[in-house]
Image (cartoon, rainbow over all chains, first blue to last red; front, side, top):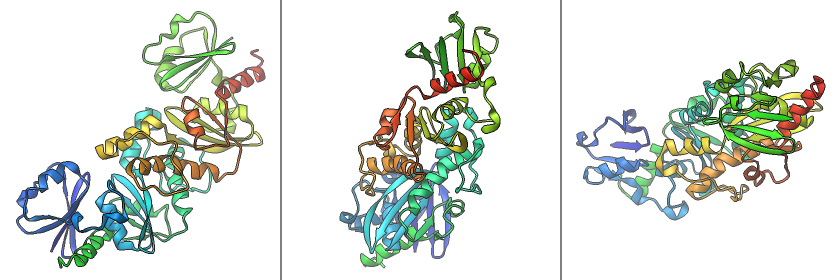
Length: 205
Length: 205
């Protein structure tokens, strides 16, 4: 069974137990001949996939009344999987969603690593630093690199930890963010697991 | 007496009790003939000002051992003025600095409104919204505009309020941020007041 989670930058495939990524800019989905069960948050790619009969959109099987209309379908799948807790998907955007006993409580979106780094750099060349994930977030910084790192990381950490819930980390930058969410569980498959749960509910497999 | 606080986007003048701004891209500082006491965080403008004899750099009069080498001089001036509390300067960058009984405790830098809005927009066109400052930050959002607004504003609010200190707001977007820091004092002159204090200490006036 082939699953695919399509984001703003890549097609993320799961083929049985092996996962791999293809670049959104260069990958042609019509080259895949087997059936692909997919979700997609990328409006351009969604238009390309719609006429391809072997690409099956799983979003139609989700009870969206629990969520809201414009929520990314990858966030929905992650929430369907975790059941209880906060799920942080650290990709080109960082999505943070809260689920209590299977009920979706809401969530927010924060810029991903690259987007935030560019945001600082575009304000001024003197703010062009890589983020320091080893920073001590219990102390206010006294140098430029840490001032930016703290601005990006401590603000996110303060808000997330204030909810006192189990944290699940997923997405391409999950390992980096595990440095500031030391109690979090890393689960790279949370979106795929949600997709599988939806397929079971819909009797697709 | 003419004071000037030069940032990344504008020359901010204070002439006696009247203040006005000039765009960094178009304003020619050599057209000013009177003495200007200035501070400047913009490296390009600083190079232009150095040979101009009537532009007097106040940064040389600051005891920088209290701060750190690469801190913006505007932040130093604001800290010199407030003496105790947190000062938030909401401009193209948002700087947050903490002073306890005259001692600088450190600070951080967060992207300003425009920079953060562009950061979201550049991730995906579906994240292109203006921020909602009227959002209820006590509830996790359930729509796209509020998800982004919460991501930008609640994270900053959580971190700043965790210090339980008096908050002084300054900078071009101070009034917007007063909506999420309802207990804060708005003081548009905090940088200029710091500059005046430094001038007094240095016996310049």
